[in-house]
Image (cartoon, rainbow, N blue to C red; front, side, top):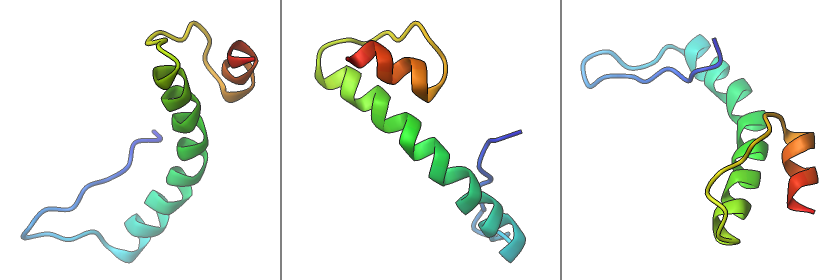
Length: 59
């Protein structure tokens, strides 16, 4: 449900699809930053789902 849509060469995204992608991108980027921090510290596996628990694991 929260997967971003991709356009093709012959069929670009509509304005509504672009707005939907922007709504998905904001919370996703916050979560992805947590995973990037774990990777930089050497950890490749995260045992919890969700931003709050993942951040707690980092500290």
